Structures are given as structure tokens and as C-alpha cells.
Length: 155
Length: 123
Image (cartoon, rainbow over all chains, first blue to last red):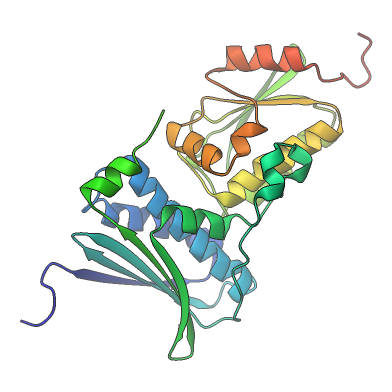
């Protein structure tokens, strides 16, 4: 049998409507929970997926809800990968500058634009490519004992 | 998204009853709270006890609410925030500008300490 027997790939195709967001993210969280027990890690995974999907719907598809998004979840014993495909407009992820927010002045806090910051903070690798004419964002998180300890929840 | 509200001693208590504030409902959430402020509510406690998940749009909505109420010289506090959401607030540094307490009693103390002018009322 070819390939890594422990790797599992699940593909979900859904409409580009924000109404699907809770359903897709919760389904993905449930899938990820087959590998991850830590609630905080699961939150990070779900959050990053939500950020990526929201960006596609809002920026690539300009809130048109009749388009298609393909989510591929790749589960390995040591990593979880989300690949999201869309055929919308190309858009660049603008990294949010946080310098202005470090002065703790509410007036300097912006009301949007944290998606990439969040994805880069919580995922071990974030990249965007083009594949077969589609935009692809790839989010990868390493899942191992050390990673879970480092990211452990601090109350 | 359903919001539970009540008014006690000139403080408006708002509690979202859903488990999520994300891009699918954050616009509604933000609009509802801003409407309260526009209608004259400038002492608001937001109880997030039922909320288990917030994304960046939910975060942005809370910032908008804080900015709006600050403009009207009001006071705003959060309470019963899930530890994971607290972690998100910390990572994004939003916790530096939000008043966050463990429960509504503590939030009320913060609101009263911070003042918040009562429109149309004599002190």
C-alpha cells in the first residue's frame, strides 16, 4: 500500500457563505480532536481556520455566497494541515503592524486586520500559493508533546 | 444571535446567549451594542459567560463598542470571560485596554469607579 498509512485526508467543499462558518469550524474542530486533546490547541486550530475562511469569503469572493471553497484537512500523528482552495480574486495578506497598539491607547487599536497575525501566531507555518489556477492557503500546526506544553493554557 | 439584557441602577447588562461571536454574527452583535450606546446607554457590562469562541471579527466588534462608548464618555466592562478567549485577548494585547473582571459584581464596581456620564440626568 502506498503512502503514509497514518496520514488521513478529509476534503470538505462548501459554499462561500459566512453562515457556514460555525458548521465548518466546529466540524473541523471535531476532526482535529481525534489527534489533539488540549482544548487550547483545538481553539487555536479552529480560530486559524475561521480566520482563513473569513478572509476568502470577504476578500477573495467579495462576500458572494454562491462560490465554492474547498477545505482539505491532512492529519498526521505529528501535524495537522489545513489547505483552503478558492477561485476568487487574488489578495495579499497584509501583516498587521502592532506597534501602534503597544502604547495601550484604545484610539490606536484598529477594529480589523488581525487575521494574519493570529494565523502566524498560532500556526507553525502559513503560506499562500497558486495551484491549478486556484488560490491556496496552507496552514500547518505541529502536534507533539513539546508543542502542546509550550502552548499550554495559562490561566 | 440572542442577547439577554437588563438594566439595573443605570447600568445595562448584556449577555450574548450564543456560544460564538465570529464573522457570521459579529456585525449583528456590534450593531446591537452600538445601537444601545446611540440610544443613550453609556454604562454597559458585557457578560461573556455563555461565549466559548471569539474570532478576530468578534474581537474587532468589542473594540468598536469600547471606542464608541469611550467617545460618549461612558464606561464598559467585560466579565465571565472564558480562559481561552482571555488568552486570545492577551495575545492580541486587547486585554491592555479592556476592563475584564470575573463576574458582574466586580464589573459593576469597575463601571462605578470609571464613572460614565449619565446623559440627561443630574448627578
